[in-house]
Image 1 (cartoon, rainbow, N blue to C red):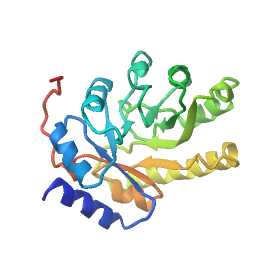
Image 2: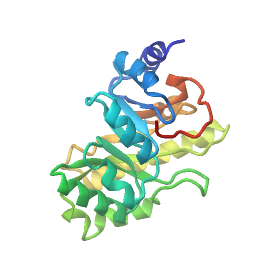
Image 3: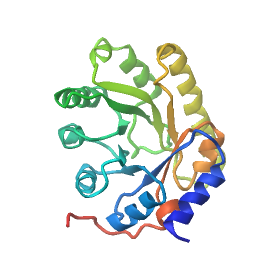
Length: 229
């Protein structure tokens, strides 16, 4: 199966209007990204700032790049000029840093708040209470150069679909509550990013409208350290 076939199959399979496909291109060579691009894919997700910035330089400028990995505050400046969305905002401190660099480039950067829903300590993300605390903070309304578009979550890496379903259900319920409480008059809060190659079908059933797929599109990842050309 080619990358183009995989993209067509995913779009057919989901069969749901309004689900944005983010092709996770971490560690993938530019030739494979271009295969997906030529098949009509325009939204790509990367985990690291270094790899993302390098690919941005070499690839078509109408690609909408999403940063989906953990972002350190000292790396924000490298992606601020061009990033389309940062999906992994896990602190007010990081949001303020994104706002600062977005202002320097006279742009507004779309962000998702990453919520910790997995039964795993290693995953990043805000607790439900911390999301509320951030949105209620005095500082948040002052941040005019970021736009919180929604929430992102990563389910537990488990063979138990019932647990995954419950985690996604909880996040969707929380998303609806946050939208009602804090974004009732702001229709830009519209994105719930849940689901990767192993669990995206469950995520869509539970209300996700953005999925992040790597191996489903590009095939199984070869484990190697990516480095600059």
